[in-house]
Image 1 (cartoon, rainbow over the protein chains, first blue to last red):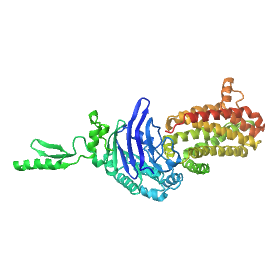
Image 2: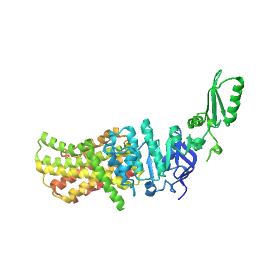
Image 3: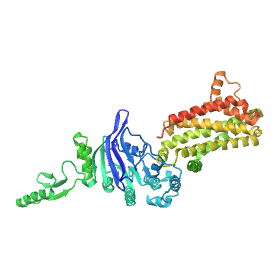
Image 4: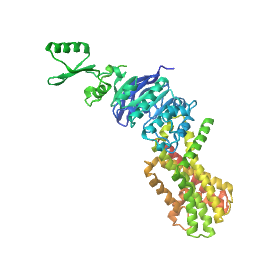
Length: 294
Length: 245
């Protein structure tokens, strides 16, 4: 078994003259939750749909569980679960009927009741899909993707439109998938979601990966720490790679002046800061390929 | 192959269950042709020769509405709802899925023809079929032609809301020129030529032959060729222009 569930090398996809994906490379290890993060139109969904076999790539190498998705047959589909935003199911089928029907396509599906419980839809088994709330319908999508007991799961913006409680449930399902040693490729534009769930993320913009790595190690190009306090003329913000040295200097200066640094705080930039900096419209924010951690 | 067949049977049963869950579709498929039969026979208090024309006409209409009309709506619906896209992401073979979806429509067409033939005999004294083989052959080929045309038609329709406009633009005029409600022996020549080029008239003529005149299949060779031709055109367009989303 290859160590990576997904390998992508120099993937390109053009629609006529428009290049939606302009040469991206990444890999997803087995058992990993990998987040593909980016603004709308960045190329996330195109990339994921190529991996799922819905679209043919224009150039590059792609391997999903060792298969080329353009030429893979049933064997790959039996091992992959897909949740896309644009997928629906029969509105007049009940939750149980839907999950049971899809379970029948797989050689060794999960238990239907257990799958329904896994996504938190227990109690709604006899409701028709059309009677479900938006959040419940997305959970049904998740149940339909999981019932075949796939080893690799694609989740395209799985919590868009969820209320906070439903998001927590979805997150716990994704954590549970990780415990079950499933591989998950997640696209999202919620930064907290990527930070919360993903082992590694790739930030994609204009069809290029502009940063990649574990969320905690992705820091803005400028500096890794922010130190701030209330000065005489307003809030003072300092950036540094060495907060110990900086704090020692500014606090000793303040003590020497007999001053107090009010509301002193030290913070790591969040993934959000990184994301906003990287995806800002200025082209200067683009990172050269050499600076992308692999 | 056996898995594909088993899954197709399973899909067919699922489609049947879903069909009965949608009362509007069930109404149009089962009640409308019967309603037309009773209404026209009553309002125009038809003579026996007219009834002998009307019953095969309504049976032909039922074949078209169960396959061409309902199948087209159904395909546009499953595409628009993202059901096609979901199925494509699962290991269900496409042959099983479309086998189930299409046989659902075909089964409706067959049930309809049986209902109309029985009602025609019991209430309107139309004889029992003279030629059973002809009845089966014409029904099967007619269903195949309109089912493949329905699949092709669905590819031309942009969304579910506009589907009735597209479908009725073809369905209703074809009903009126094909001898569904009355004999078309005295149509203007140009319109008669159009009707002869289209499939519905040949289904109705074939059913008339099977139910009433008992002339036999050998008198319907050109009709069968026209129907097979439409079947081939429909399949070609359906495969050539098929859209998943």
